[in-house]
Image 1 (spheres, rainbow, N blue to C red):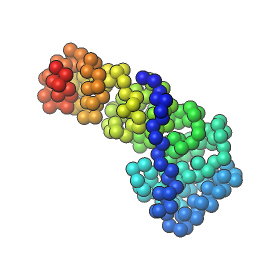
Image 2 (cartoon, rainbow, N blue to C red):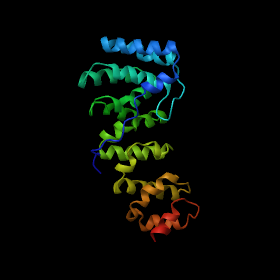
Image 3 (cartoon, one colour):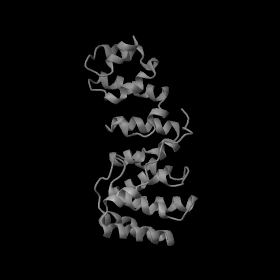
Image 4 (cartoon, rainbow, N blue to C red):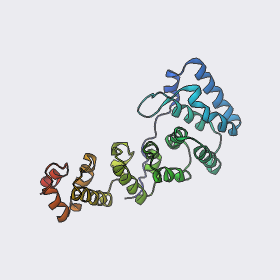
Length: 235
């Protein structure tokens, strides 16, 4: 599985959605703050943390909460490029609370960073905060995370009970090796008498040869397991 050359779609520009939900005072604050950041990049360090208090944190749509969207507006206003932009983004992430970190991770697909922000994705994936893991596995990770790391990220989602439909690009990046890893996971769960997550099934089904004899025997003795019908259909 190679990193896909056609990057998954980035989340929509949050500014129009924000304009529809912000009150006049919050809208004015955000517009003025974005202008300050464009004129003086270091201003983002004091304005970025204030966005939640000044704008709110309600959910706008499936992609954004108000504070995440407002903070993304500030990030996209930065007139920096390349390593300078990456350094500022990393600084905001490392000094931020979880809400600020989620905002940085969700904004990554809208910033021209190349591979320079992969360190932030990796940090999120090493942790146990499921909201940060979900935020990290957006279009940026789908386009830039190396194959082996992407597979491990998917497996971590399964272990952390994060629905796999939250992983952007999984439909294009899933491959036989990932299916094999998930089949091994399924076998371990069945042997332990535990359920196998439903969303693992289509990934394994796409590569039926990974369902070996040992797993097949285990599945046949686990009639209530959602993977049982995979074996029956392929048999």
